[in-house]
Length: 387
Image: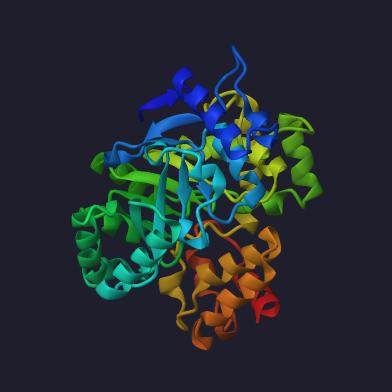
């Protein structure tokens, strides 16, 4: 992995643009000024064959808008799913377009629909080009990768018109590792964004090694689900604080852990406030320290029993075809992230036959779960919460 710390030229550029974005006044963006002799808060790593040097922490359109200037000032230079914005935020307007990267997510396999979605978003934001068109978690099975390919024609048209540069895909449903491996093998995708927690199974690690071998960049998502749940457990919290201290950075410890997996370039964590952003940005580089490794081991013990890693290995075992990973993911949105209405809306979009209420309680899923979770009980609670 080609890593580069935040250099002097980059630092001066960002300091100036952050000030411009904040109207020249003193704002929160100044909180991330780099001090001489301090390890960099942001490290730039090569995103596979795109050649882009992206910040090890990636920002997302649904971060609190009051954090955008802080993200720019910190040196974050990649923005995920920007079609969610009605207009380009001022802190990004203040930057030269070549100074940052972004993607637009599409949710259809069809050529004309994909083209129209992409172009509507690009023109609404007033951008001459987008760095990546991202297929957003549409595949349910690996074999579909070679079957549902109409969007490729839309991508080829957009690329020929100079409106997009790379093809990407996110995946957090279905058999995530197997689907991502199929996308890598297809040769069409330049970088992927799979759900990767701190408990990757063997098939996930094999997929990441394949990505590294094929020079396909990886931006990990859904990395913090276990943290939110673990912090509510007094025993786990005490064990983690023993290693990190009461003010220790849980987020940075988890991010460093995921960045150490083979092939992972960056992570895109959920951030709702300044404290979370600060928690995610270490002041000691991105190599996990001994205390951070020990703290993550405590979180892992909790997560193995409590937090679904969305690996999808249980899906084929369910005789009812329940969308187990999706049901538990939506429950995490509700219980951990606090997105209660969105979680219920997403759950309602699932056919009744795939909702957790269709579970027969046979336990076949638990026999396949590599974490040994009590899946049936979690499905019952998810349905009671979300239905």
